[in-house]
Image (cartoon, rainbow, N blue to C red; front, side):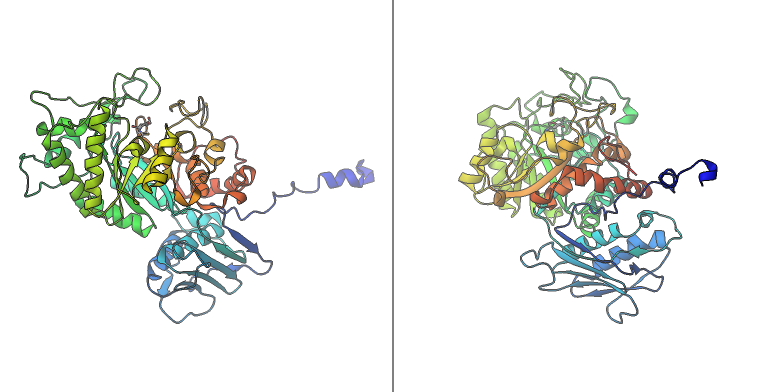
Length: 545
Ligand code: TNX
C-alpha cells in the first residue's frame, strides 16, 4: 500500500461503509421490559403453525396469520392443537399476563424454535401480536409477496400499559370518512396498541349516524332527516376563511349496518368505539335538519364553515345551541342517545358539551344535567369535554375529557364527584395543529406556533392536572379535528408520527420515556409506515432511515 502512497491507518478510514447504527429493536410503544438474547433467530416458514390455546386466543392468532399472509405469501394454519415444528403459540389463560396486568398485559418469548405469546385476555394477546409484528423485518408490512428471511430475534418481553384508555378521535362530522378510510385509520393505529376509537359523529357541519324514529314520538320528528339532510352537508371552507371547493367537503353518513361494521372491525383490532353526539352546542346540523328543534320561524341554514374571524385555522365555532326551554330538545336527545347506546357495545357515550358559547350558563347546566342523567339511565358511562366538569355529573362514573381551559374544574369533578379523566390537551395531542412550519395548513393557537413531535411526547399524563392523581386518569387521546383535513391520507399525514407519541405516552411508564430514545426507535418505523402505505409527516427531529 505504501507503493500507492497510502499508510495503513489512512486505508482503514476507507475500509468499507461507515459502521451501521446501533441495532435497536425499534419497538413502539416501548415495552416495559425487553431482554434480547444472542443466538439463532426464530424463522417463520410456510408450514409454521400458529397454535391458539384458551378462550378467545383464536382472534389474535388469526389476526397474526392475516398480518403475515400478504407479505410472506404463506397461508399459515391456525390450529387448536398439534404444534408441529417451531410453532407460534398464542395462549390466553389465567395468570399468563404479568401479575396485576390481566386486562391488557402479555408476555412474548422468542426462541430459535418457537414463539410464545401469553395473556389473560384476547386483547392482551393482541398486544403481544402487535409487538411480534414489529420484530419481523419491515417487509412484513408489504401487501405483496416479498422474498426475504422472515426472522425474529430472540427476546423475552414482559409488557403492559400504563393507562387503560389510549384513544384517537376522528372528526367525521366536518368532513366524512367512508368505511374503507375508517378501517385504514384503525389499521395504522392498532399496531401501536391504540385501543379506543372516538368518533365525533355530529357537529355544526354534518350529522353522520343514522338514527331510527322511535314509536314514542310525540313531536312527530322524522329522525331520518338527520342523515337525509345533514348527512349531505360538510365543511367546505378551510378554517382560514378560504373556500376549498364543495368537492373537498366530503359528505356521507354511516347506516346502522356501517356503524356495526366499524364496531366489529375496531373490536378485531383491540379498539372500543366511543361515539360522540355533541350537545348542546355544535348542533347546527341537527337544527338545520329537524324543524321541531327550532323556535317558531327559525330555519338555520347549513354552515359550511365560512366567516371565520379571526382566521386561525379552526373555523368558527360556538354559534349554535339547542333550546333549554323546549320539551322537544329533551325528547330528541333522549331518543338519539337511546338509539346510539343500543348500537354501541362499549361502555361509553360522549355528549360533547364543548364551546356552547351562545347558551347561557343556566341553560347549559339545565340541559347537560338532563343529558348526563339520560346517559346514566341508559347504563352507559358519560363522557364530556372539560367544559361540562362543573355540572352535576353522575357520581363515581362520569368521565371528563380535558382539551383546554380550566384544570381546577376538572380536579373538582374528580375530587367531589369521583370522575375520571381522559387527557387531550390541545398542545400535546391535537394533530391539526401545525407540527412544522412546512405544513401548509394547520392551527397554531395551541402552542403559539408549531406543536412539534416533542410537544406531543414530552408531557406526563400522570401529573398534568393539579390535584388529580394518576389513578384518576383513564388515559390519553389524540384528536383529529376535521376543519381542513380531507380524507384518510391527509388525516394520517397530520396524525403521524405524533399519534405514536400519544400511544407511547399512554403505554410506557414515565420513567422509561425519553425523547431521544423515542426518535431513534421511530427512525426505523418510517420504513414500516412506508411499506404499509401509512402516510406520515417526515418530522425533522427524527433521523429517518
Ligand atoms: C375546538 S376541542 C373544538 C372543535 C374544533 C377544535 C379545533 C373541542 C372540544 N372543540 O370544535 O374542531 O377546537 O379547531
